[in-house]
Amino acid sequence: MSGLFAEGRHAGEYRFRRKDGTYCWVNDEQTLVRDAAGEPLEVVGSWSDIGLRKAAEAAEAHARERLNGLLESAPSVIYSFKAHGDFARGRSAAPSSRSTSASASTRASSRSAISAAKTAWITRSSDVR
Image (cartoon, rainbow, N blue to C red; front, side, top):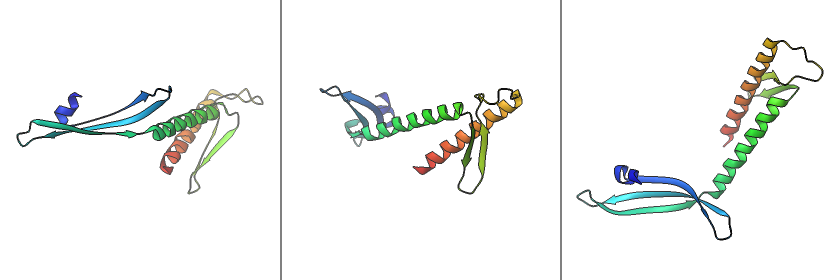
């Protein structure tokens, strides 16, 4: 709240528990209105329901966690194509049941390629918004 008097604005996100036990997420914004002498006169504010946005953020986080798990545990080659035809290729760090004698440098290279593929996917998915 101290930011309200210092900067003239304050915003925060929080949730309320309803009588039925569910929660309502809100964005709370407040603006300090001052008189001609610069003294605080009133606070004007609003609450906005941001439940849908919070649900979308949670779904996105779950999808990213699932993708990371799949990419880290996939025993096969993974390709990630960009719109203009470039691609990143990598093999999982998890050993394949068919080949357990991969060298350390091959495993490190595979982890690096998987990391690049994850970064490319995350970048592409954030551009879609």
